[in-house]
Length: 140
Ligand SMILES: [Zn+2]
Image 1 (cartoon, protein in one colour):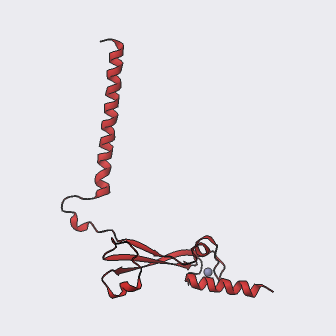
Image 2 (image 1 turned 30 degrees about the vertical axis):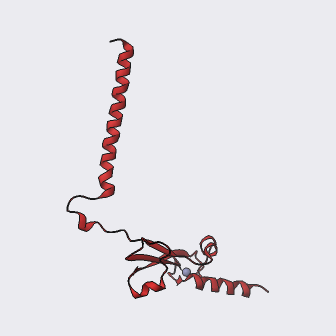
């Protein structure tokens, strides 16, 4: 064997080793993502779809800074969840949209403001009213 053939064989050996290691690596990750071991079926839960009930003035709410009317800390957005089944009577009050996959339970999240300092909670509508009132009273 001359050196060129040796080098070629060595390169191929390295390539196969790397590919093999990559396969072993991927094979180790896959079961963790799936999480399906035999007899584990009962633990596997259907992922419940989440729908965010967004305010009409989404930019005003999410992009503008809002201060707590009590202690003037910066308010943080928090979410409150309700789980509504598409077959239940209250489902008519919620928007399941065009998404036909949303059968059964759907999680509807409504955002609201919470003050991290004094724990005051305000709905998006309430902060809007308060800020409008503040603005009109500040003007001469
Ligand atoms: Zn506060």
